[in-house]
Structure formats: structure tokens, C-alpha cells
Amino acid sequence: MQLDYIVVGLGLSGLSFVEELESHNKSYVVFEDASQKSSRVAGGLYNPVILKRFTMAWQASQQIETAVSFYKNVEAKLQKTVVSELPILRRFNAVEEQNNWFEACDKPILGEFLSSELIRNTNPALDIPFHYGKVKHTGKIDISSMLSAYAKKLRENNILIDESFEYDKITVAKDYIQYKEIKCRHIVFAEGYGVKNNPFFNDLPLYGNKGEYIIIKSEALKQKEAIKSSIFIIPLGADLYKVGATYNNQDKSPEITSTAREELQKKLDRFLKVPYEVVDQVAGIRPTVRDRRPLIGTHARYANMHILNGMGSRGILLAPTMAKKLYNHIEKGISLDKEIDCKRYKNL
Ligand SMILES: Cc1cc2nc3c(=O)[nH]c(=O)nc-3n(C[C@H](O)[C@H](O)[C@H](O)COP(=O)(O)OP(=O)(O)OC[C@H]3O[C@@H](n4cnc5c(N)ncnc54)[C@H](O)[C@@H]3O)c2cc1C
Image 1 (cartoon, helix red, strand yellow):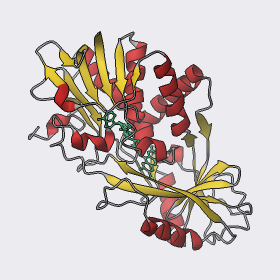
Image 2 (image 1 turned 90 degrees about the horizontal axis):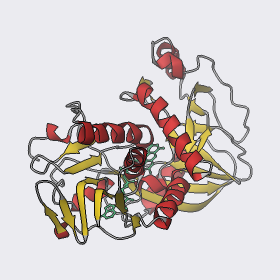
Image 3 (image 1 turned 45 degrees about the vertical axis):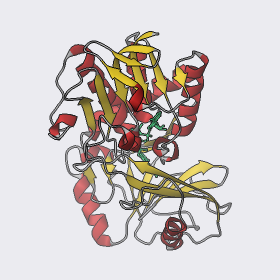
Image 4 (image 1 turned 180 degrees about the horizontal axis):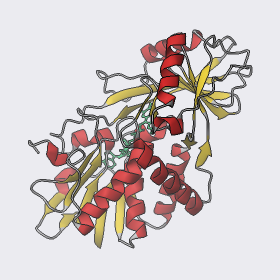
């Protein structure tokens, strides 16, 4: 079989790159083995503001436009709801935080995303003594059902191979790559934290950060907007809410833990005043990088081998933009900014 591309991994990164291939009529196959869960368990929120410090996330105001139209396009193709608008309310812990918020509202780009109105809590289920600030232009992507529907479509067209990619079966020639019976022009690795098993790119400083959510059911909560306090409460419908997430740099195991559940419940119990039941828990490893920037680009020795990774805790906004940059780099020779190019780490 002769193809333009092999893509390894169908998380947010792999899907974003496949969309580039589709729009340029390239031939490809995707390998996916369900070994990583980051995209599947993510909260799914898109929000350009860092809500701890009230600053903009890196290049987020440019990425948000690209991302929202990207997911709406996928939604139209899949004929399935993927994007929903969802306001995010930031719970203030003190008057000082309110003041910091209002200061941030006056800053040029931040001002577009932060509402300067103090929002009073009307939900008796929640203890919110210092009120909320509202982030504008935020929403939620139903990543898990988008990925399932996308995979189904690829599978129906014999483009998805539900197998682990075996790195030792690869032969790299000057103008092509041979993998088993497939000959392709390029290979793009988008394995998230799974890149640790990839001998061509595993010396990059992608450390990973484990995140866990609990899913709670509470009939009395009746909350429509997402709330950000020390943790997020994200409404899922049918009285279910995602609560979290944790951040753990040490534990890289895929399993859920009782430590995370206890930590999340302790934080939740500080401001949720009604009964709830924990009905589920999920865990995944965020593909985080030492300098908190994506890792994309071409292997130093193999011109037909590429990486699309390092989306950290903001894959929804980053992946569509980074996939486009990588595609333009490979096919049009457009250089990558040093900040995101994997070659910024010399030991590759
Ligand atoms: C708890 C948690 C909450 C989060 N919340 C948000 C959020 O609200 N908003 C946001 O923007 N981001 C969030 N993130 C971050 C976001 O999930 C990541 O940035 C994003 O999912 C990374 O996508 P990816 O495709 O690069 O990696 P992954 O999602 O890890 O996808 C990689 C894929 O490659 C496959 N794979 C790996 N190795 C192989 C192999 N050898 N062969 C075949 N397949 C392979 C894996 O099975 C996997 O499907 C969250 C992450 C976590 C863990």
C-alpha cells in the first residue's frame, strides 16, 4: 500500500492533523491503540484565560478563533453536536481577588474575555461569599464522543487501524518510510504521553502530568454554568458533574487513585452544601513539556518523520493551530517558530 502519510494516535492532536490531510486530499492511515486517555478524559473546556493568575494563556486569543471554527466544521461533518457554549464562573476567595480581577478587566486583550460585572450566586447549593467573575467566549467540546464518532467514520473507510504502532518495524529510506506492507512519504507521531515508548522522539523533555476527575451525581445542585474554584465543577447534564482535576507530576500510572478522589472531595466539600454521590472517576496523563510549549516538527536525522505533541493542559485550543503549522512546515517548507520547534532541544 502506498500512501502520503501514517498518523500514529487519534487524540486531539492526531484528529487535528487528519483534518489537515483531509482538506488537502492526502492519502493516509491512522494507528490507534487506546493506550493513552488524555483527550478522552479531559474536561473539554476551552477558555483562553489562566484563572489562577488572571492572565492570557500563551497565544490563546489567536488560537480560540481557529479552534472554534475547527470543531464546528468537525461537528458538521460528523452530524453530531460537538461544541456547546458554556459560561465559566470564577469563584472569588477574597475581596483582594475581586480587585485583581477588575484590574485584569482593564488590560487590552484580557478585557475582551473577562466580564467586569460582579456575579452574585443565586444557587443555594453553593457557598460563594465573595461572588463570581464571568469569563466570556468560553465553551465545551464533547471530546470523547467526537473522537468515537470520528474513529467510526475512519474505520468504515478502512483508514483506522486499531493496533499499536510497532516502532521496531519501521524502515526509514531517504524518500519514504516502510512500515510492514505500508510505504508512505511521511509519518506523524501524535501519541501524547505515549511518546515515551517512541525510540525516535523519547529523548524530548515531555514529562507528563497526571490528572483525575471524579464524576458526581447531585439532584439538588442544579448548576448550569461551569464553576472554577480550587477545582472545576463542569455540568454534564442529567444531574451529573465532572469535578477536578488533580495535577500530579510524580505518578505516571494510568489508574485512578483514592488519594485523588479524597483530595477532590475535600475541595468540593468546602463550597458544595448539598448531598452528592461519586459515580465514576477517570484519569489521564497530560502531555506536558518542560518549557510549557508544544513540541512539533521534524526529526533531526529523518526528514520524513515528524512529531505533533506537547499540548499540555490546553489541547483543545492548541491542537488545531499546531496541526496546521506542522502541515505547512512539512508540505510547504514554512519554518516553525523556535518556541514550538522540537529542535529547540538540541539532544534530539
Ligand atoms: C484530567 C485532564 C483534564 C483535561 N482538561 C482539559 C480541558 O478542559 N481543556 C483542554 O484544552 N485540555 C484539557 N486537558 C489536556 C488535553 O486533554 C491534552 O492536551 C490533549 O488531550 C492531548 O492530546 P493528544 O492527542 O496530543 O494526546 P492523547 O490524547 O494522549 O492522544 C494520543 C493518542 O495516541 C494513542 N497512541 C499512543 N501510542 C500509540 C501507539 N504506539 N500506537 C497506536 N496509538 C498510540 C493513544 O492511545 C491516544 O489515543 C486535560 C487533560 C487531563 C488529563
